Length: 337
Ligand SMILES: [Zn+2]
Image (cartoon, rainbow, N blue to C red; front, side, top):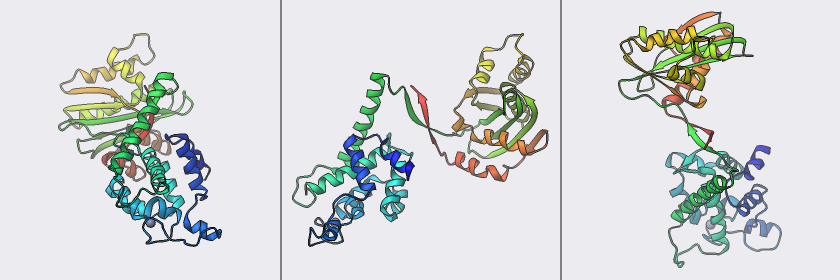
């Protein structure tokens, strides 16, 4: 519940909307059911549709006046669950949702629709006779406006120099294979490992590996990951390979080279040796959210013996990560503007 109330105060909507959400979450907004319970009203029936008890969830979601609007705002695959939830679960799930729909965080659109649904009801403007503009468009436009104003304020004042972006693994182009590698060192230097996976343009697992290195630094572990990944891809006769790593250091050494005095020079040179072979290889930096499978392999190998481990199939504990990558699941990440 603490996360829930915290969230209410951080949803990107005007303050009065947050206050309203807070009141809804405490179930203290006034409906006919509540009026009758307190003996300040005779009827507990909905004033708008007259077809059901006027509970909070009825006024905000189920009353046909609102349900029709929600049906056009909520993505179809989510609709059933959306209408099945009880009030608090409904609020919780929608306000904590990290999805972005039409470039606006879903929580913002949701909160604006809840607020305006309430305002329309209180103004008694539902019904046949009002000359209503398109309420769905109204809510969507307003949510987009609120969101873009929030970001613009941040840019102007320098308060928000970071924005939330959805980041996830993306399959390579047709004809290319993707190598994701990662290295980890617990303590830097400390017990270290590396892992990598090669997938095709459908996101299917071709092969993977993990290396329980023993003690070394994090950059060294990263490079062992890239090196073994290159070896594996070359042996699999991959002709076009795109490498993704979440270490900017590694990408930098690949692209700009490395001085002879650097302790990593031997390994960087080994990797460079592969680049001059007869194939196309490129390396790019990705955020960790796009490199979860390699990260998972590198962590998984801590439970295995020292040395190199080859995986023809994804280890069962990482099946979910592979699947999430395959379907293109993204996660929010604060990205510096
Ligand atoms: Zn109703």
